[in-house]
Length: 245
Image 1 (spheres, helix red, strand yellow):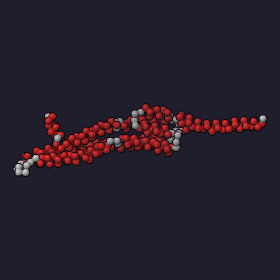
Image 2 (tube, rainbow, N blue to C red):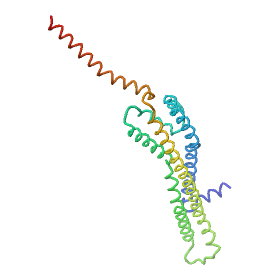
Image 3 (tube, helix red, strand yellow):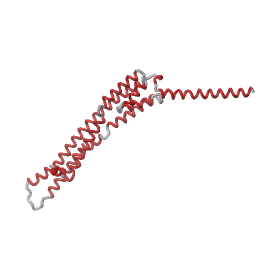
Image 4 (cartoon, helix red, strand yellow):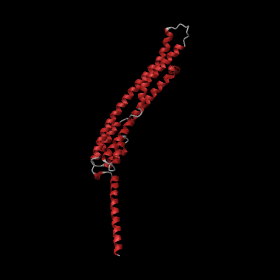
């Protein structure tokens, strides 16, 4: 049995090895993408519900802590909004959040190009192996030898196995590519809806409910002119006292 497998892999001048490698790559990418997209929508919706309830009650710190604990990639999108809130203009907060959302969308489509490449090239690799196998079979006959159909049918059928394998791997890769691309598009749409709802609630939070760190920085900025004015008044009073003396 082991010998027959090696004989099968030797068809097409090594093209069968390339086809098998393509099949392994397609399966590896499919498993990796399945793990990356596993329960993505359900986790994102659960986190979005927690954040929405927190923002509705004005509990920004509580909803932010939920994002920091969550393993969902959409938590990174929400955290960008929390970091920018109170430090920059509202339109800049929206831009930063959508920029992070696009980055997460790109990560969802990572390595899908491998499936597309395998689906496009595997049939041609199989066809190349078949051509090489037929050329090798035809070249083994001598010019003055009478060739029977049984002598030709065997090598040709063996060479066609490579083409069949290439088509099978291509069909597998195309199906996986379409499936994970459709899932990535569905996740991207769900992320946009959750992000838009998050921004609407975040930017409507009253100023006294903003994160403590941002409010502390604002207080420090406001305190600096007061200190300068106080120092100016003190200096002026001292000068007046010296003039009176």
